[in-house]
Image 1 (cartoon, rainbow, N blue to C red):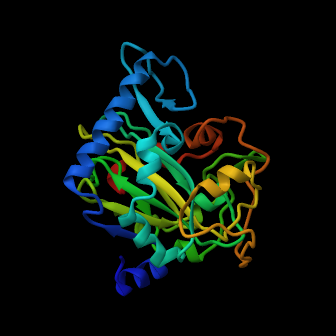
Image 2 (tube, rainbow, N blue to C red):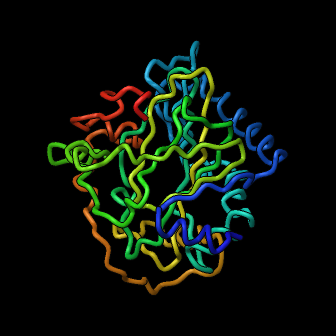
Length: 292
């Protein structure tokens, strides 16, 4: 459970850090499962439904950027998204009925872990209301040196920025960066097993990992069950199967929130890393990590 102070903090600032959300034993089990999955990447020669590869990947020198939608492919993660300790905390923010929207594991390997440009998750998947958030579980100790998630406090109350370039969605803010005060950015650091929570409208990103320490971050995206995706429901059976707490609803709750649809689709498909290739200006390519 979250305390009233934690709930109020999230409401005001749009993010929260929860230390020791997973036990040391649970972290060890999570790491072992991830190591098993990563071992299979050596045989991949291009992006797959599971693996998103870093530039320069080869069977001889495997480099993995992301494990895609692990809850779909591995029973361990389908169970973890329903962990009572996680869902009990989320109920304090989203209410008693919660649906999983998606999942991914960003690897951020030592020395070359790719950056993620500034963006808002809401730009990728707007809903009928904005009771939508992402949970991040740290597999490794995370400090300011190994590419932590960065959030602009309170930005979830503000505008939804344009994530397009040359008329196509690119999953990054490339033309409105001058409106953002990056001096306010907060690094979501912590020990392995800590959990971050950030609102879907919160501005966030992360620099390249230039350290000798990896920073793996497992991300689960959740929404209130009566928040319906504006892009539609492709598979109603799967949609309801992703209820992790409480019950499904066929009555969307409508609450006004600024929306800009992620259409036309990005020219580069596959993941946010591919989408962001289309961004004209890349903040983390221009700004040294020391500034953050």
